[in-house]
Image (cartoon, rainbow, N blue to C red):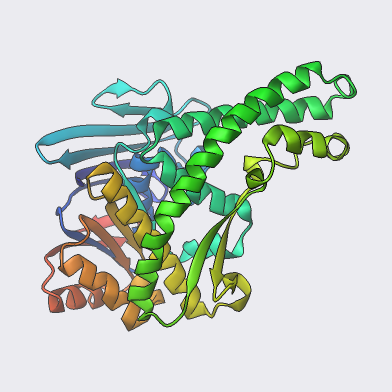
Length: 364
């Protein structure tokens, strides 16, 4: 699967641009702040119906404008389909496939799979559990529609329970609260099982990528931290009832679970070097890529944002080997140098298109 054409209007710093892409490698080159990463984000938008970097849609509109449009032509074997994303300030975002509007944006997830590798991935290690849950949920949702539906239902119920906990009229009168809790417990069981099964299947793949990149220098692990191994959600609600009433929100459940990133049995955030953390994250993202490929039987589009400037030769070389050996499909690369990446790709005998980006405009 690959994106053959992309058209943008008023997206971030790009007033208007049109592209025809190679199904192999495409390079966006130019100085910092010119719009290279914005182009990757536009492709990401067509996959996830939102920005990788800014979830507030209105803030992705070009200054002094009140709308943006992203359009792409996607090719998969003998199939071709068009994607359209249009957003106007103060109005609901519109997302279409072949001119048919999605009733729910969630229905689009997994149609056009994309994996982004960026220096911002370090937030998976440095930030809180919410960031890692989003990574987990976003990955599973690419190939499991029911999981996404259950997750959305659980989150809706969670908001309702939290609202009741903040409303003094419902405290000490638990009938309605327990109705919501029973529904949450049912959804939590389903979500917990899918997450647990996924981690068991995904971790060996991740470990293999880490061993390959690091030459098997140390042992890393990826663990699923959850209270639902020992208690049902209903039991957790009972155990935390008084606490939740005081806090005014739900303190335990699948919305509080985490992924534990470890190296030699210790948290990689505290005990991993910068190089080990970078290797961990690249292995995590490449495992995501391969897992989606195996599940959906198509190669996702790979977006590489400024990694050639941030990684050492060993890690860059590993990724280039994957590209040159055709182990990944279509790939997009950004870099601040107009010569470095083209030179390296030529050394690896990789065919590519290149586009120079200057102040949001494109020079092929």
